[in-house]
Length: 255
Image 1 (tube, rainbow, N blue to C red):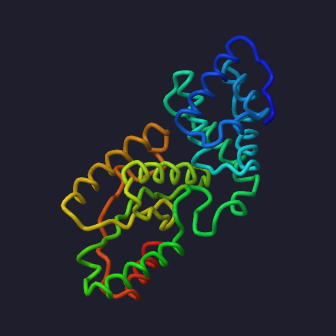
Image 2 (cartoon, one colour):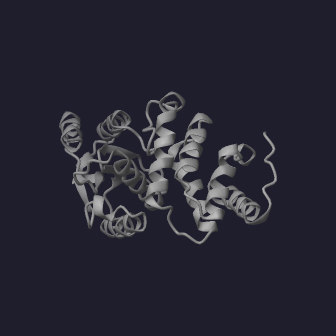
């Protein structure tokens, strides 16, 4: 581990509080948290200077260290909460995400079944999991359409800015992970569209309403309400009885 240099003054206090908060809430490997780019961003934020360039440098450093984008963004948010800002400003999010993406190592360090930007499963992985679901249904003499459904969350609108799309996708992914904590497969279905394979039970209607409200609030807090569908669409897509028809459904949802 590289030992951080003392900063002194307000910047030192901000860095110490940020590191503690990340260790408590987000960072999986506390000994690998510090990087020189951390200090550059801390000093800019503490001194009231433009943090965009330091944010891009830190995003690049996190990607080069093999840290996924969701964990990196959680850590960035922890810094801004330390200084009393609930959500990082959009220009900072954009620069940080651009730096992370430009490093170009995430696809190499991430398993093929995982989307490198959101951390959700890919459509390819979903096809594999659905194949397992349908085979299990045959073995149990059950109908998939009676037991399992695909919950779809869609906040997509036409936008020319790719980084706004990335930030929006990360918000959707975080909301899915917050609502679904029981090991349900959570997947990327398309640009601005994600989903979860869920059991059809009496709680599903309440889950849909909760997810819709949560996403609506989080998009607004992130400053993405103007580049997102408001309110977001959340619906339950029944799974067909036949696996080939289910694959056709996934193709349609990805468009």
